[in-house]
Amino acid sequence: MEASALRVENSHTIHLAGTSVDRYDVELPAPACHTAIAGWDPRRLRASTAPVNCRRCLRLIERQQLPAILQDAIF
Image 1: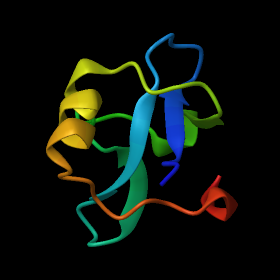
Image 2: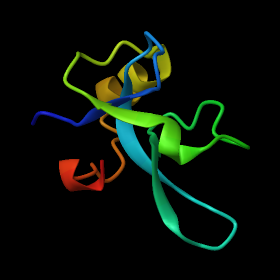
Image 3: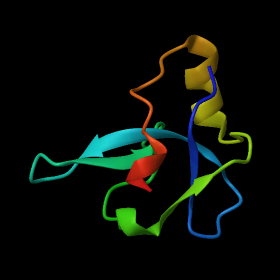
Image 4: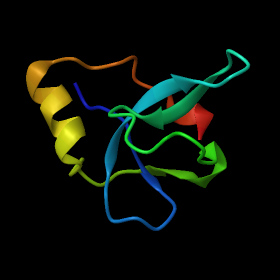
């Protein structure tokens, strides 16, 4: 299964795409590892076709603890 990936603006870290729930209970796209998502702007996310290189996301993939994968249409 090919997972969606994303990066935060021009970052070189590629995350597995996941979701996060904001304070209004709205589900938003987010890195699957949830690293540093408090206080950030989800509009800074960019879809990526590069391979995931985030260590935390790679561990999730290895353990098969994958969240729901986002559709490309969200981006």
